[in-house]
Length: 154
Image (cartoon, rainbow, N blue to C red):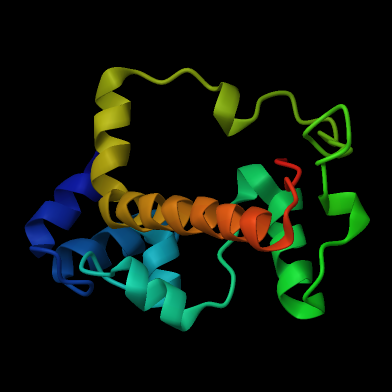
């Protein structure tokens, strides 16, 4: 909540006394829009800009498919392990290791108030992710059509 209040006080500027005070107080990174800050894009970013900047855009929930898209881009062919056209399943087998972690973020229950605060901290990132999803699924469809396959979705 304090980060959101500091962000509001900053008027969207990245370096202000309110945000500097937050950093000094908690000695931690600025949690606002980490993905878009890292990529150097703002809230006005478009799908066209992203596709011009990046050859492939992958999504973590579809890590294996994202890796396949990269391989297909480089090889200009579909590796057999990526093609689920003739398989009885449409997903790849992926080993998941939790390394003993008891609670992952996706299983944590948060309140509506917490959710609202998080939404304010990641507003630009949420927009970037929505565009990335659209680009990703369009790329999967293009590959499926171009190579007459059905990429495994995982």
